Structures are given as structure tokens and as C-alpha cells.
Length: 179
Image (tube, rainbow, N blue to C red):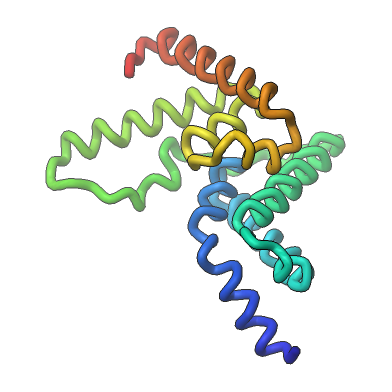
């Protein structure tokens, strides 16, 4: 195939999954710049595996798995570094500015505060618990899909999900927040 037809084929296979994959990248990294880097790295890797991608019936979960593996690899590499660069400051709710609002500013503000509170509570979870909650409860992945993404048995995922939800309740109660 020509390079042009490869690009068109790749776009046809991958573009329908862009929004969900970028959302996953942001949920994993919690930083806009890191999410964009992770998403770009995924696209580069996936383009290099176009032949493999053609043989897959459902490319969405495969792409999500590749992204998760890239994320884990980057975290491991970062953990091995002796010197850590100071992370750019992140305003509470960054990434939420694009949420559609209704005509009630008070309701918009309350919704924004809820998202910020939940985001802060999620940040206090362990990495393994945060990832399972985000994949299942936020992104809507099924337990079997999560198993394929993170390579952990379904029973372990259920256990982590239960413990993560319990810990979130504790955190929110400690902060005096009730949902």
C-alpha cells in the first residue's frame, strides 16, 4: 500500500476511538501535557503496527491496552530516575473547563466543585485502585476489558474496585463531603 492509503486506513481505524483514548490518557496522567504526550506516543506506536491493527476486530480495547502499557512503562522509567523534575503546577479542575454548563451559574459552580472534590479524592488513592476506578466507573470499561488492559484477573479487579470505592467513601467522609 502507499503511504497515503496507509494514513487513510489508519485514520479510519483509529479516529473513532480518539475521544475515549484521550480521556483515558488524561485520567491516567491527570495532566494535560502528559496526556497529550501519551496519546501521541500511542498513535505513533499504533501506526507502526498498522498490519496488526488490521487483524483486530475491535481496535478500541487493543489501543487502550497499548496506551496503558505505555503509561506503566513511563511510570516505571520515571520511578528509576534519581532526579525528578518539579511538576508544573496544576490548577484544581484543569481539564474541566470544557464541560458544558447550563444556564444556572450556581449549579455550574456546584458541579465544578463536585468534580474538583472527586478529582482530589481520586488522587489520594493508590495507583492500582485509581486506575481500576477510572477505567470501570468513569470510562465504562467492563471487568473483562479491564482484565485485558491491565493483565490482572477479574477477581483481583473486583477486589480492587471494592476497596477503592470504600477508600473513596472514607476520604470523602474525612473531608466532610457526602454524595
